[in-house]
Length: 189
Image (cartoon, rainbow, N blue to C red):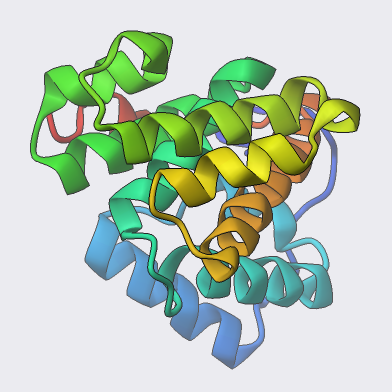
C-alpha cells in the first residue's frame, strides 16, 4: 500500500476518470477540500462507484424525517459498534460539523450512550446498535419502542436502511484497510 493509496488493495482508479466522475470529484474537492478516500477506493470500477454514491446520497442526503445529523449519528453509532476506523473518523467529523459541538461529536464517536441525547435519538441509536450487534433478535418490541419515541414506520425504514448501509460499508472499509483522509481528523474541532 502506497502512502496515498486509499486502501491496502492494489486497485488503481480508472485513469482517466470519465468526465461525469471527474466532475463529481472536482465538486468534492471544491466543497470539502478533498476527495474522500472512500470515493477514490471505489473508483477502480465506475459502476460500483456510481452505485455506492447513489445509495449514499439517497440515504444520507435524500428526503427523510430523520435530520442529516441523526443520519450521521446512526452512521457513527454503527461504526462504533463495528470499530470501523474509517467511518468513525469521517462521520465523526460530520457529526461535529452538523451539531456545531465538537464535544458532542466526540461523545457520539467514543460512546454515544453517554452523550446527552433526547429519548428519540437514544431510541434510534439503541435500535441501530441492536441491528448491528444482534440483528437476529430484533422484534416487534424494538419497532414499538421507536414508535413510542415518535418515529413513524417510514422513519423506522430509514433508520434500518442507514444502519444497514453502514454495516456494509464498515465491513468493506475494514476488509480493505481503508484510510480516512487526514483532513477529517482536525475538522470541526
